[in-house]
Image 1 (cartoon, rainbow, N blue to C red):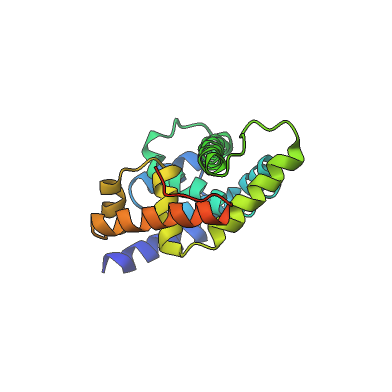
Image 2: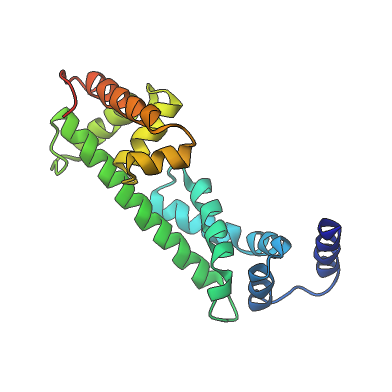
Length: 195
C-alpha cells in the first residue's frame, strides 16, 4: 500500500510543474526515491561529462556517476538549500574521484612492491606497463579472491571486517587472501611465500 502511495506521489509530481532542486532534495531526505530519479534525469549528463573528463574516460565512469547520485541520496538531509544542486553534485563526484585515486594509488603501490617495481617511476611507459601487468594479474584471480584482496589492500579492511562484509567465515577470508597474494606474486613474476 505504501508503494502504491509513493508511486502516486511520483506520478503526481511529474504531471505538475517541475520541482526545484531544494524541493527535490527535501523529498529525497524524507525517503521519496522518485526525487532521486528526477535529480538523475536533470543532472546525470553534467556529472557524467565532468567525471569522463576527470578520468580521461576510464571504464568506471558510469559507476562513479551512479555512486555520486547514491551518495547524494544518503546526504540529501544535509543539502544547504542552494537553488541549483549542480555544484553540490559535482563536489560529491570530486570526493569520489579523490577516493578512487587514493584507492588505485594504494593498490598499485602494494602490488608494485610485490613485483619490485618502484611506484615513482619517471617514465610513463614503465608506469603504464606496470599498471597493465597488475590489471592482467588481477583479472586472473577468481572474483572472490580479487574482492578479498581489494578489500584488504585497497580499502584497508581487517580480515574480520571483510568476513562481515562478505558474509563468510574469517577462515575463508584468510584462505582467499593468502591464495590471492600468492597468485598475484606468481603472475607478476615473484616467487616465495607472502610475508
